[in-house]
Amino acid sequence: QVRLAESGGGSVQAGGSLRLSCVVSGNVYSRTCVTWFRQVTGKEREGVAASSVGPLYVGGISEYYADSVKGRFTISQEGGNDKVLLEMNSLKLEDSAMYYCAVDLRRTCGDDWHDISRYNDWGQGTQVTVSS
Image 1 (spheres, helix red, strand yellow):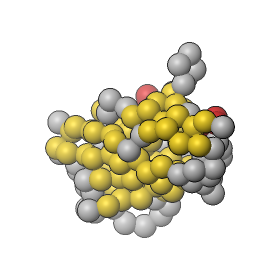
Image 2 (spheres, helix red, strand yellow):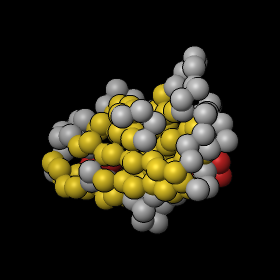
Image 3 (cartoon, rainbow, N blue to C red):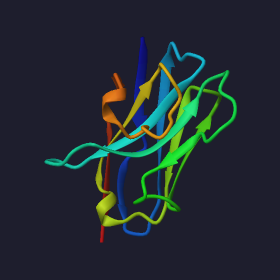
Image 4 (spheres, rainbow, N blue to C red):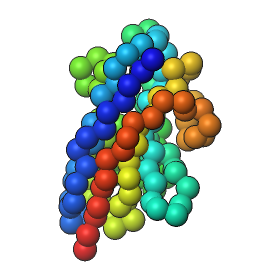
């Protein structure tokens, strides 16, 4: 069983930055996809960024981004496989949402990284509010 805990959300003015953290604990297997999603009340949850992690992961594209955040957000790993960060710069009003991290323990990310049905394990979320 895997557990996820997000942190780092908060309120920031447009143009500012935040760094979200997702701590993954439990059985992280050799190939895993960790993905950040976000959701605004009344709208569908959308994929933001994904990273393939795991002690045996080698080769290929390991990071994926939604078009709306490319060039502004960066996903990375810290401390091995147990922490995935989302560095968010040049924040816009439309980035305001509840941000969740999720994992797919069965395989690495790939082109369907944003398919919400892949993910069985979710964190509780952290709120990001961007104001003008």
